[in-house]
Amino acid sequence: MSEEPNIGIKSLRKSTKDKTLKAEHLRDSNRQQQYRKQSRSTNKETQDASHGLSLARAAHIIGQEGGIDTDDKENVKALKQLVNQFDNLRMKDSDLNKSNDVKFENKIEKKIEEKDPISQKEEKSEKKTTEFIQSHQDELTPEIYNTCEDHFKKEETESGHTTWDARKDTKKMKEARA
Image (cartoon, rainbow, N blue to C red; front, side, top):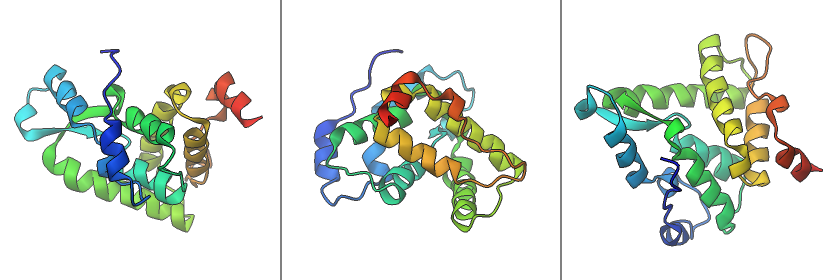
């Protein structure tokens, strides 16, 4: 499964003309279908291939909040490849995927915006997200990586710890900042 996914650059060109990055710009349904086929889940008929770092949240962090230029196709391509990695996908009950997960993410984003501390459960989820991003950092452009870092470092936690671990930055990202 190390085969690089076809991310559909032509569809990106058309879909990002309005300069606003949206969740649908990042979806790779072929990749989700591949994941679903290889999944060992016993309840596939009632489940979706869900994104850990959701498409909507990635588009918000990078596009709206981060202001990443969608004219730079390398940025969008790198982000689309990131969110469609198999280690960002999981089989989830369709109802949970479409309602509870969205509410959970929205609650976290609201807390970040209002500088309210996130709960321990939310912190645990956010650490998984940041670990995922950092495990793929060399596949990202420095602009995308820095935007993610800035976003997650803003989080206030009940424990007082950050969910972003700068010690995990690779040499490539450290050099890109210098």
